Length: 107
Image (cartoon, rainbow, N blue to C red):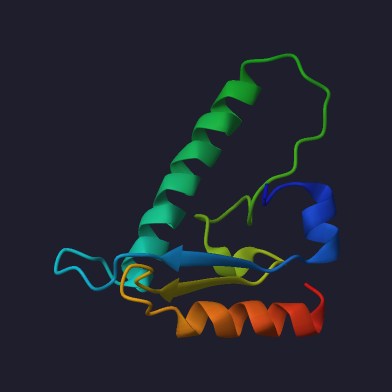
């Protein structure tokens, strides 16, 4: 799923980030993974903006988040949820609940 796809934005499609291997001692908590992804998306967004500034392009480009602020998942129209899990140990209750909720809501 491409978060800056106009159709994904229009339909407000929900997404789940499953943070697997949460049973391992080296596992990062979902909040830390979320922060790391936000930072990486922000870096990519800045690089993309700089590249577009050097091109003669009249195309409209969807901007992910708010242009004047660092990227945060909360800025999106779509609900993005982060859940820890361990597929190997069968610790997937939160994942199953998210899927069931999404099926019920149609998103």
